[in-house]
Amino acid sequence: MDFMTAKEASEQWGISQRRVAVLCSENRIDGAEMIGKMWLIPNTATKPDDARSLRFQPLECLPVKPFVKWAGGKAQILDEIRRLYPSGLGTTITKYAEPFVGGGAVLFDILSKYQLNEVYISDINQELITTYSHIRDDVSELVDILRTMAQDYLPASGDIRRTYYYGKRERFNVLKAEANTSVEVAALFIFLNRTCFNGLYRVNNKGGFNVPMGSYKNPTICDEGNLTAVSERLQNVDIVCGDYKESSGFIDEKTFAYFDPPYRPLSETARFTSYAQDGFDDKKQEELAWFIKDLSRKGAYVVASNSDPKNTDESDNFFDELYGSMYIARISASRAINSVGEKRGRVSELLISNYGEART
Ligand SMILES: C[S@@+](CC[C@H](N)C(=O)[O-])C[C@H]1O[C@@H](n2cnc3c(N)ncnc32)[C@H](O)[C@@H]1O
Image (cartoon, rainbow, N blue to C red; front, side, top):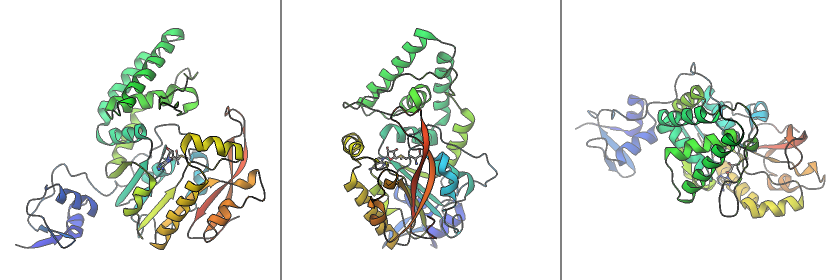
């Protein structure tokens, strides 16, 4: 019998090599055998019917945008980040990784514009990742639930609206405490994000989501067009709930990786409080820098963003020293400058990359 390699099957079937390997390991391709470290596939094998299609769609399809508002979202500095996309993206650079994906402003920009073979995203937030997964795998069920929520919530006002919001919040917390990952959790996650105060995601010390109701009169709860377009775009994407370090096996010399960790707070006091909240303290920032340097040595194209300590202390060289061997650009962003988030002002932020020119 004649055999082909996973690479040849991937070209013949129009799916990624990684996907072919997954199908082989799931025993979904008759006669496929692992010889040494390679899969060999009979030439007569056919692509399984439900194998997720393709390298990304031709780019005439609708652009996609984040389906949630997310703290630290990168929409407003997207132009600056775009300028740092490596020039081979979509040709010689065929893979993309975003291990701190959050609302995915950069992810969706890239999925709207480039044809890539493999994409990996992750986040530590379980409910956010549950939502990404359901958008990819069963968007119509999700849309049905959101449509019902919109029909119930939007015409209501006063106490009826409040009771509905807090009822949904309570239901979300019951499911969250059970580590439930059903489509209902995904729908509640989007509903709460759209209707809560400022689209915040905040939990109490027992892990319960505790953001109060927002005051939007007519929020978009069910954006069916965008959710459907996002679903199409996520078809071939690996979606992982976990620590950013789990991405190391994916990222190689053909990968563009964007790292957008929780920002280092600008004051010592805020640093102390934030340590208790999300654990991303200075030691974690250092570990991330080492991780990024390892990926650099592997030949990956890496961009990372963070706050600029020099906004509050000109002598603070924390990131300049940590990323001394890389290019550091200082850009200007409009950010909330007080804790209530109403006042905005311009602050400097850092874009760090391991290629290209330093722009200060
Ligand atoms: C600044 S936000 C990312 C925002 C995103 N770029 C956007 O446009 O919306 C940082 C994200 O990192 C996630 N996170 C925090 N610690 C993490 C870890 N150790 N591994 C992976 N994700 C983590 C948070 O849940 C949050 O969603």
